[in-house]
Amino acid sequence: MENSLMKIDIQDEVAVLVPMKDLDEVHSARFQELIREIVKKGLLFVVLDLQNVNYLASATLGMIAASIETLASRGGKLVLSNVNQEALRILNVVKLEEVTSIHTTTEKALEALNQLSKAG
Image (cartoon, rainbow, N blue to C red; front, side, top):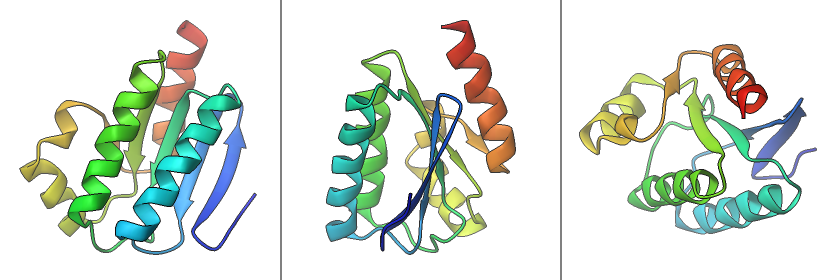
């Protein structure tokens, strides 16, 4: 599944979301709608693959935090993968790594989430 904003791939019980470009204020709102749609479908584990994202706006950080909270409140989890160095620096400054995990590859993120989804 794909739209102009995001590529969506469902693997086992995990949704892998790959933004096709930076998530600005407008796109961040659409992303939050997408998370709600995913939850309605019963998917509670999400990898947000940031390979195409070069800039993290404050709205994007808020969207990621809200999505982490939405999924966690339902027993799920959102993790990040393929984060570039500049984005990683920003995530560290706002301490987002304290509420989610950041993986170097989507494969590692999927492995971690698959273990969680099978344990739950």
